[in-house]
Image (cartoon, rainbow, N blue to C red):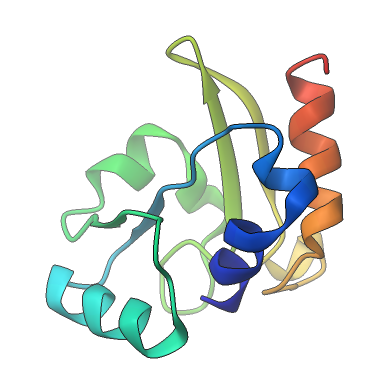
Length: 113
């Protein structure tokens, strides 16, 4: 969740005015406790306990060993996927943290800014 905290406070990312939403398989209670523990303050933490959202965005193709998405970013613009990038799966490098400047640049590029 440090990724969320860092994106919430990164000037380059926040200047894009693109809201963050975190979606995970964990229960709302687990997500709330984890968010509080690391200092997530602005990002909604949504539970996808039935895996329907992950399935509809096809991010389970990059599921990690536990069967859940690793570290996948999806940019939705105008109701359509404008950009999707998975970092967590082994075939994509297995990274569970991406420098905020990299995310900001890729989002800006996808939005044509």
